[in-house]
Image 1 (tube, rainbow, N blue to C red):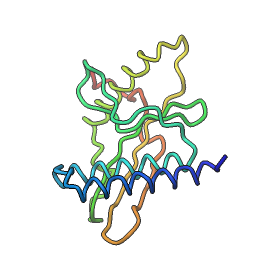
Image 2: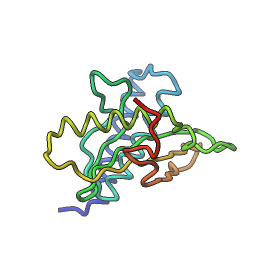
Image 3: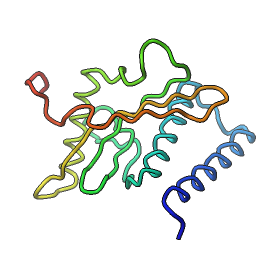
Image 4: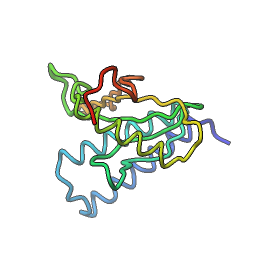
Amino acid sequence: MLPTSMRAALLERTVAVLDAVAQRRGRNNTPAHLESGTRGEDAAFFHLLRKEYTVVARRWSAGHVRGDVDLIAWQGETLCFFEVKTRTARDLTPAESAVDGQKRITLRRLGRAYLRQLGRETPPTVRFDVISVYLLPGKKPEIEHFENSFALQQEFRSES
């Protein structure tokens, strides 16, 4: 069996080839900003696979909670929720700064909904990470992974 990093690289190349074929056939009419967001999430997904995370969901949403979680994965016994922010240029404001207070509240609500869905008597250890992806022309994606960016519980009560 191939090592994890080689499997991830092979899968990544396969997806890239299939995307290129679909694009040549004119099957991609997605707006540019959504296309770059999808490419960033793909890059983050393969980054996690190479780091031996077990990805269990992409773009997960709960019917009764607005929003979605970009990626959900296990790292050992820790359940990780990921918000991916993609930029096509580096400017003064880093991509990860876009995960503001309101987005954190939404992600916490979604995280709680996912934990309820698991139905475990004892919930797992939970972590919220942010991954910034920079898709710069002519370069491989640059990925910055911020582990434990914020906690499931806020230090003060301002959310409902």
